[in-house]
Amino acid sequence: MFTIRQILVQMRQGDVVITRSGLMGRKKLGALRQQAATHGWSDPQQPLPDDGELAVLQ
Image (cartoon, rainbow, N blue to C red; front, side):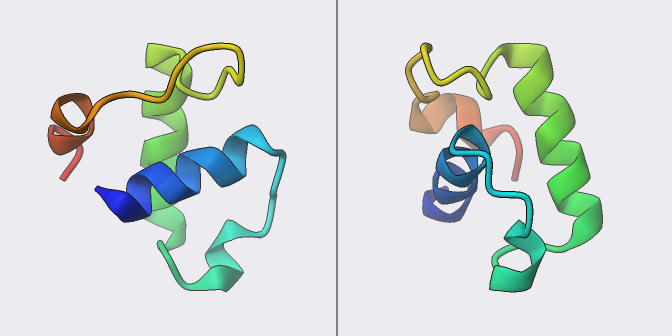
């Protein structure tokens, strides 16, 4: 969950080369972006999701 949270923080900051960091592949990152958009996690004004919400992604 730490990795997912870290990637969400990077997405919120506008980082576009997350796959180069080696944290996550393109397919999983695409799925995470879709989930983030659906749940509003990519909005920097909203709090990051808790561990329970992130657990469903794994």
